[in-house]
Length: 263
Image (cartoon, rainbow, N blue to C red; front, top):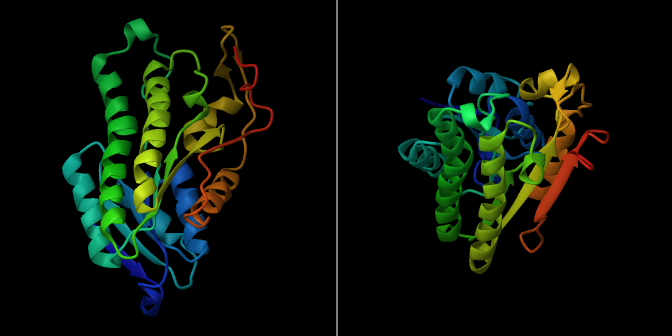
């Protein structure tokens, strides 16, 4: 089910248009609201309509338009329907924030990880990112004026793993390769592709870190977190660059988190 909330329909067609996946919570919600506050029209995509509508309800008053689309990014038909809805409503696409993802079952040693759990993480984090990027790429290549931007949500785990995180870490390393390849292939068409690697943003997904997270030495220790709004502002900066400029990779993290020197 798709729902539209229009704050000022006279501006539709002149504002920039973004798709944010995983927009019902956490980083996706924060980025969507930051873009809306900056005047972007935003399509909110996610698996649960009720959380998307909660995000939409928090949108600031003004000239932005919100489109909510229920979509499971691991399903090709859902992704096709999402981008069809965006094309039908807005006529173009300027930004995809490829954010939907899952950590999978936490704290499970590799030898005990069920294949179904591995497959779910791969389907969401990697296959879903590819499907959305492919759909966005097709639209950006054909629209007039041509071009646009894709920002993939990587992770500190795209560089350095946590213990017992084989599926998540493998997909985030693969996402870096996806980003590089898309960036190269998008050059002739004015499609800029970058990646933001995020560490310890304060969301529901990271709530347990402040009480204790497993470290590489086997100990459990609390970790500092940062305001998710700082991530959202970084994504907005990347998004609003002219297409002649690109942040290829950005790392934004809690200053004192155990990343530099992890392990």
